[in-house]
Structures are given as structure tokens and as C-alpha cells.
Length: 405
Image 1 (tube, rainbow, N blue to C red):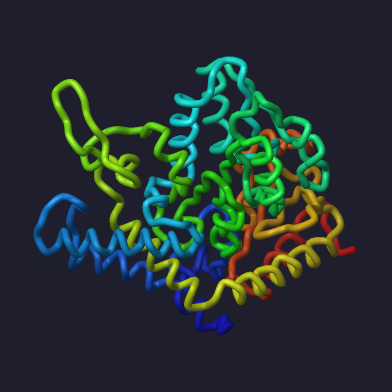
Image 2: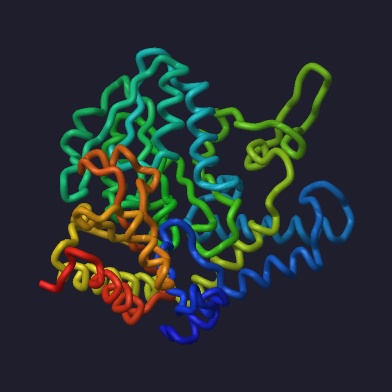
């Protein structure tokens, strides 16, 4: 993997912050865009901008073809059976809400149970809380141990004839835990329970195969894999998508309309009312090509080595306490420094041109497990370097109560 070439592909990495070289280590929040993605979006708005699936003129036909080509790329990327199982959304949050709303309306009744984990991002927790409130159902929680691994024995005991759906994150956005989703799905399917996978943090690592996982729903956001923000994907098996209603209604999704009723189009269009974020979708297609041109296996190997190097360097510092130590960690390392607020650490790093995230990371129940309100999260990507990690460590060593072991 030619790291110098890769870094040159990202215009933002050439800039400085406060006169310092820019070091971006907040990739779990959002990833930066390579020039090819920026160029693809620019070219669309410059040469092809039109409202997809509406008119018959050249621009509309061209734009519609580009959008549907991207749908097919995503289908192949996640190994879905059919293109119509790929729904374009605003992001993972909207994707989850579509399932929670629709599934809740059709399949959840008073006394039923929905299973989520203690480590969920709020986007895969709050929608299910609201379904339970609305339908008088109950939320069951899979706990995790102090290392950050789910307790599968408890999960297996939670599943019952009252369980109607399981919703679980593929990779924790705070701990980096790679959950045993295939096992989780197998256990649920033994009792005919469908499973939704939140793949927001796993998608850019190229490990999502919906056919192999046999998940019923899966969602992700484009901005987590180097495409523009405001575009996401919901994958669903046809047997489920056919049965649940849309979350929003409007133009583009209807077959016929009278003043009293409407008939919706078939999949995927019944979930895609309104105007698409076409530029974002085309950008997502370009981002996927960029990943594939480099090679997902090469990227995974490099990022795995970078995470290991980061853990090793942080472990050599007295005063730093890791949040979790899961069996399989992917993409992120989180920590605290006793007696120094996490926000203060993030601000000090920012003043040196280093971007990280501090706070609760939209996962308050997870942090409460460790009796914390916030932590610092480092999330490198394949355009980061060991030298950047070294610079991060140098700045951390300047903090009070910090020293090398």
C-alpha cells in the first residue's frame, strides 16, 4: 500500500491548523474525502444535475442511471441478493428509524420484547425505546463485561417467544468491540427472531457480508466511509421490507393516487419518497470504488497494525486508563486521564493540530457502565501514519500527571 500516494489523494490532509500539520484522528465520527469522490460530486452538479426518476430528458436519464449503478455497486459490496434490497436514506439513523417505526407498527404489540445491547449508539437505542413506549412493549438489554465483550449467555437467556426483534451494533463506536454478530443472528433465528445490524462503524473495513451473516436488516452511513454526508443505506430482506410501511410519504414512491388513497411502488422505491441526495449517492459510489482500488484486505491489515501501535504507545504512559479491552478491537481506542477532563485533553490536542473526539460519543449507557460521563476517543484510518501517532503521544506526555512508564 503506497501511503504517500494515498495521503496525496486527500486534499484536507495538506492543510495546517494553528500553523501545525493537520493530524485527523476522528474517523469514527466522520471520514475525510479523497479527491476522486469530491471530483465525482462536482462533475455530477456541473454536468448532470437532475431530479432522479422524474423526467424523460437526457440529464434525468443519465442521473437515474448513475444512481441505480451505485445501488448495484452497494448490493455487490455487501453481497445482497437483489438491488431492490438496497434502500437509500439520509444515514444510518434514518435507516434504523425506518425499521423501528415500520416493524413496530406491524409486529409489536403490548407485552412484546425488543432486544438491544448496553453498548449501542443512541441511534440504535432511542428508536426502540420509543417503539416500546408507543406499543407498551419491553426493552431487554444484553450486558457487556468490563473488557467490552457482550455476555452471550445472558443474551441467549433473554431470547423468548416474546422477543420480536434484536438490534445490535456490529462494532462499538467507543470500545471498538467487533461483536460476534453471526452467532447473535444464529441464536435469534433459532427462535425465528429477525435481527438488525448497525454497521456504521464496520462498513469501511469491508467485513460486511449480509448473505454470510444472514441478517434481516443492516444499515450504514456514507460519511463513515469517505463519501459525502447526508446519504446512507438500509438493507433489508424482501420478506420484511414488503411487510413494513414507509417512515415518510411523498412524491416518487407512489404507483397511483386518488384524493382518498394511494398505492405505493414496489421495492426499493416505496421507502424513497421525495428527492434523492443524488450527489451524495454518486459520491458514495465513487468512495466504494476508491476503497476497492486500494483493496480492503490491505486496508484492514494496515489499520490493524496502526491500532496495535496506538495501543502499545498509549500503554507505555502512566496515567492513561483504557476504556475496555475487547477480544477483537476494530477502528477505535478510548481512554481517560485521571483528574483531567476529556474535553480539556481534546482542546489541548486541537491546539497542536490533532483532531480527536471527547465526550459521551452518543453512547451514554456504555459510559455509565464504567461510571464515566466522557472519554477521549482516537480513531485512525488508513491515511494516518505511525509518525502521527508518535506526535499524539508527544503531546499527551506534556499533560500533568502523565509520564512514561
